[in-house]
Length: 418
Ligand code: GLU
Image 1 (cartoon, rainbow, N blue to C red):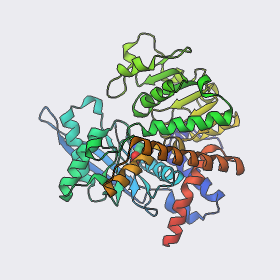
Image 2: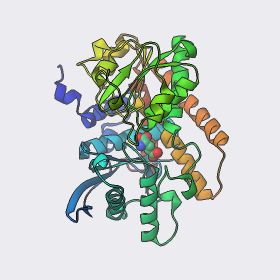
Image 3: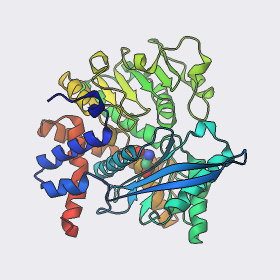
Image 4: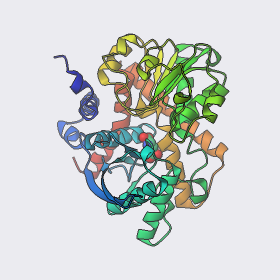
């Protein structure tokens, strides 16, 4: 039966369907699916904050912990007006898959607060970040659940959160959170890690499709943390970045964009297109001619509504959930190679893991060490998923889910939970 557009865009529902299919293909029981289809724990919190004008506003926040059979849970906290409980739940499941694919000793977690940081002062953001940590402090910690940056959160917010947690526990706890500023125990290479991981995926995908890097034409949707670093890395490596976008619009030039100029004019949230008169829409950008399309913004960008107009040969998902399950099937049938989010964007959590290891050891690594270990992990993860895709004749997303969920299901079995 054909699914409706509303069902197609329900990310929790479609994630559950793919988890079910992945577990079924590997011979796991229905009981295993019953356990893994939802987070073990979801905490919903109300956070009262005094705003600069003296009034109080109450913010809604969440923290979801998908499964801790493998180890503590791990995943970012997003600040966004459209955060919902179901979205945070789905994102926590995706973090489990990411950690499984790159073989980290973690399960998945995710947090979110319904707010718009673009309209808040620094002081308000600090109070909200600290209030969130107080609200969830019972269930998080360096050996329980380790937060990190996500959409519209950054190293400064991680610093406030770490400071608040350390005050509550009354000892310095750098391993409570990753993505911190370097002076507070952050890792070299963490800020650009998601983008670096994506460049490694692009290399692998180009090899699989036989396209040389210097001939590759790339469109990147989103100019936040992942999108902007990626544009810089691809531009510096000799590829041609021909399209970028932010929430307000997109720039496209088949002859290549001046990325260094755009980066120097970008604000803290990655906004730059407002400065230009001739923009196109985000939707139009996705449909432009290119070799590689990198959605690096938010969910549900490539759907059955526009999949037949996508002209890229390769899609590398730097954002979480940009392509729906149905659009994935449609495009795979047209031989578009999709490197799914749970694989392509795992570079961030890999270097978060390195940061946590360094915090626990009190011994810090050089950027070269971080980069070479990241590369080793990402290349191996790509090969594992690609081999499942070929040998089991499943699309790359299902191959990634099968690879990502296996370790967790085994850990659940050994612990005797199922
Ligand atoms: N928020 C990032 C993600 O979705 C990073 C998570 C982390 O570093 O723990 O992968």
